Length: 259
Ligand SMILES: Cc1cc2nc3c(=O)[nH]c(=O)nc-3n(C[C@H](O)[C@H](O)[C@H](O)COP(=O)(O)O)c2cc1C
Image (cartoon, rainbow, N blue to C red; front, side, top):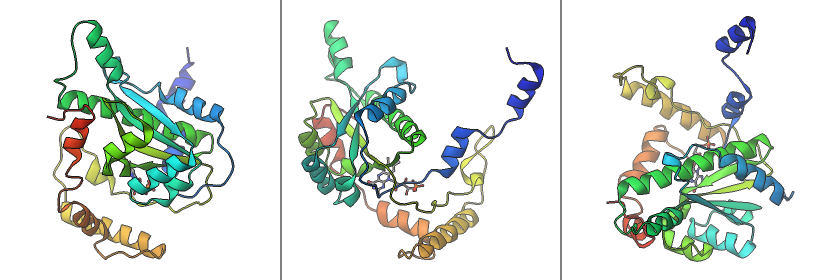
């Protein structure tokens, strides 16, 4: 049991190693040639599998990819992302309904009529494991980058990784020892993203104007092309038309029915 003064210190604390780690976090896209050992990947994943999991379903699998030809193929299907070909290790975080299906089959049922809920919980499960792995790796000094480009073509990713039916790759992660230290991308003001007790009205226009300016300054500082309305313009460019239109059918083909 903590003594009274220890309890007082604990209840007043507003920082910790984990909080500092998150404050300093940034996506890293260049890695050194130093090897990442199997023992390190095992340690990272073993820790990550302690992430909470909906109804203890543990509806995830991770494919650890080191093979150069596979990383090259993944690089192409994720939109020719160079870092995917160059990363020493690529982790494919998958939603995986196979073990659940097996449990149901043992009891005379199947998953042929699965729906949005099961698709969502398995995807959430895989995402929580992914972020936990990211933080566990970071605590060893390894830096990562999540890769949503795997959803450009889930069928091609399944072919490359030989994923069976009822498994799809939600996102991938490049992982290696950092060979760059990029500046952090600014986040929106917390006034926009945190509400107390109920969702509070906000000054959306003024706050987004401010964020557009911050982000434009960030990209300009890096010598990257942008516009004065950096974030709102970027979002409009990316999302005004439907993206990955084939995804619903492709995931259905993988055994996930997002009805
Ligand atoms: C689910 C997910 C998918 C992502 N996919 C990609 C990707 O395919 N390629 C890439 O370069 N970055 C990808 N990112 C990284 C984001 O672009 C990055 O996190 C965001 O721009 C904020 O920058 P920061 O992580 O440096 O703060 C992804 C991030 C997440 C969470």
